[in-house]
Structure formats: structure tokens, C-alpha cells
Image (cartoon, rainbow, N blue to C red; front, side, top):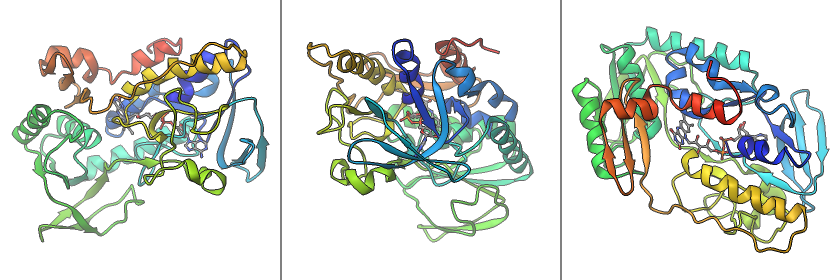
Length: 361
Ligand SMILES: Cc1cc2nc3c(=O)[nH]c(=O)nc-3n(C[C@H](O)[C@H](O)[C@H](O)COP(=O)(O)OP(=O)(O)OC[C@H]3O[C@@H](n4cnc5c(N)ncnc54)[C@H](O)[C@@H]3O)c2cc1C
């Protein structure tokens, strides 16, 4: 998100190189639907060559950032590249238990084929456990239930309620809607052990042991737990700018603390706000403006980004026909016509395609 849209802004004036281990940019909001309806992913996965034709894309993995801010990047062939630039931006996002929610080292065709296999697995399964009742777990539950209303779906959530990052009203609404549709919601319940490890995505029949002592049979277990910052490449030389959560400490200018020519954006930062694309949309213009100022040696002060701390805004879908949105001044919106228009009908795919200058498909 951050890397792609920042590159889009900067490539008009600078020679931008984008390193990403995938061949493509994927609109993450589409994933909860793509894993059930693989054809939905076609428009949401956009090869960088198409999304950012003016940007040089290197498909590789940043493995080490050196003290002079040059970088080692490993290509799929195993070849190591050494890259150096006038200014670097880190935007490597979150790392999940497996590559269900975010693909790794893939081409578009591989990702589409993976979605097809996963959707086939969902179709076959009767008893499905979703681990995690955050926005991803809730959205996946809504999608599966809409497509297959008779499957037995259980959400296992360790906290006291679904959607902990937003207002209680929103959690209650989502829980009520899903329960009414037959989804079982177990809050204050941890998964203690499952027959399959989280890395096993295309799993099948097994048992899940819960902290309550209950044991649930499943045909498929889907991990919808949150991500961890993807910052391993900082360990060798930049461990001192990582906080205890392994997030990169940034200044309000979005420069990495102590480095004028190194920026960090998005999920990997220590900005105290929900890790959401919605907030990243506000970081991009600040970073773009500050980078321009630095690279053109202007003396004017740098712009500051103010983190959206404790801001409960969120838009969560409950299938393709409805959802629930929370906006700070307005409050909760749950009118299906509005929530469908806002997100559920399209998962924001046309919006992000338009921002990249592409047609809706
Ligand atoms: C399923 C899902 C649904 C979501 N829905 C919403 C929503 O509805 N609304 C909302 O506001 N937010 C949503 N989010 C959150 C939002 O997508 C993230 O906050 C946002 O994508 C983070 O942006 P980012 O640029 O920090 O990282 P990402 O968008 O994750 O991008 C990181 C990129 O870095 C690449 N990468 C990682 N490590 C390396 C490396 N070492 N070398 C090279 N490349 C690397 C990855 O391949 C990836 O392309 C959702 C997230 C998920 C997973």
C-alpha cells in the first residue's frame, strides 16, 4: 500500500526503484472475498509493470539494510543484489502466520491458482474454524456464510469481543449479525492446540483444543490473526531503532529516528494507530512532500504526520451486501445500502485501481 502509492507520486519527478518480493501489487481489502470467490482477485492483483509503468520494479527480498542505508536484496534465483540510493523508504508491512492473507514471492498467476485451490478447500469443508475475530476474521466469516449459509462456522477470539480496534457498538452489531446467520462466536477463548500448524493453509480434518477445555472438530482451520512487523532486515545494523514490538521508530516527519535519508511508512512503524490502509493514505502525502524537499535541498520545514491514536474508524464488511462502518463524528453506520456502496459491494478495488490510473475491469 504505502510503497506502491508513494512510488506512484514520486516517479513523476525522481527515478524510483521498488523492491517487492511479489510480481504484483494486491489490494488487500479484496482478499477476504478472493479466498472464497477466486475470480474476484483478477482485478485486485495488478502486476507492478501495469500498476507503476514508470517505476523500476525488482522482484526480490530485502534481507539486510547496511549502516550506510544501502541494501542487500535476494532475487528468486538466489542472486544477491547490492542497491544504493539517495534516499530509501521502508514499507514492508506485516508478516502473517502464512501467505493466505498476503502472498509472498509470487506471480499473479501463482496467486490466482492458490486462491482457486483454497476456494476448493472451503467448498469441501463443512466445519470451519476461524482463528481471530478482528476485521479479517469477521469479513471472512461474512463471505463464507453468504456463499455457504449451511456450513458450521466458528470464530475463536481470545479477547472479550470481536473487532477490538473499533467502537463496542460496532462489535455488538457485527456479532449480532453473524450470530443470527448461524456463525458461532467464542470470545475470551484461545486456541491452545490444533492438529495443523498455522503454516499449513490447505489443511483438512483435525481437532482444535480451546482454552475453555473444549475440543472442536474441523474440516478446515483458517488463521485470521493479526500480523507482526516485517522488519527482520533491520536486525543486523538497525536494531536500536526498533521498539519492543519490532516496529521501526519514526519521527513525525516519517523519517526513521536518527536518519535524515531513511523513511518508514505503514504497518512497520511505531505510530500509535490501528494498522490500516485508511491511515496510511494520510501518511503518503506527508512522506512524498518531505522526500521532495530533501531531494531538492529546499530549506523549508518538514511536514508532520499526526498519528490517529485511539481513532476507532473502521469499515468492516459482512458479505457483499452489507457491513458496518464507524466514523468518529458520525458514529456507526449500518444501513446496508450505504455500507454496500462504501465497501461491501466492491471491497475498494475500483477506488485503488482508479488511483493507479487503471480502469475498473
Ligand atoms: C486481508 C486484509 C484486509 C485488510 N482490509 C483493510 C481494510 O478494509 N481497510 C484498511 O484500512 N486496511 C485494511 N487492511 C490493512 C492494510 O492492508 C494494511 O494496513 C496495509 O496494507 C499496510 O500497508 P503497508 O504498505 O505497510 O504494507 P503492505 O501493504 O502489506 O505491503 C508490504 C509489501 O512489502 C513486501 N515485502 C515485505 N517484506 C519484504 C522484503 N523483505 N523485501 C521485499 N518486499 C517485501 C510485501 O510483498 C508487500 O507487497 C487489511 C489487511 C489485510 C491483510
